[in-house]
Image (cartoon, rainbow, N blue to C red):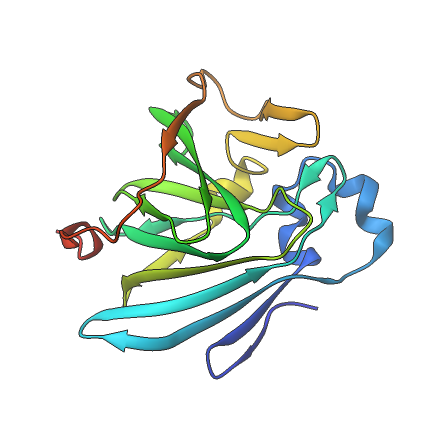
Length: 193
């Protein structure tokens, strides 16, 4: 089964994530099950779209549950806010050769800026649901192909800590950035060039 879509509602199933998971072969016996839920276009403001994603707690093999991960087609950024729970956002610049990689740990009420040119994955490392919202340019398309080709982002967050994805060469050390406490005043990064 693949994603179900109904008026902006989409379910992401395990079968769509297996190519980006560290241990997918070990957990495929569990069958196909819903991993997280997306509600796209909940509201709009001008050319911006507001979406909500709900990621229930889970562990997929050794990894904490996560989104599939993607890059934006074009030079568009994105702005996330944690509505409930606590999440970790992994950002990487580059598809085969990684120029930069960092993570942001954010709790309820905090914001995460995804700069143009960065791919990103959202992780729920807690035993409670993670509910996040995002603002994005309404016509942005997502590209999952490079992350699928490399079997995930350049790092996996496991129950034992961060693990490098061996399908990437020359991955920089992972660093941490802080979440934003307030909604940014300048949203130009959402509109691309």
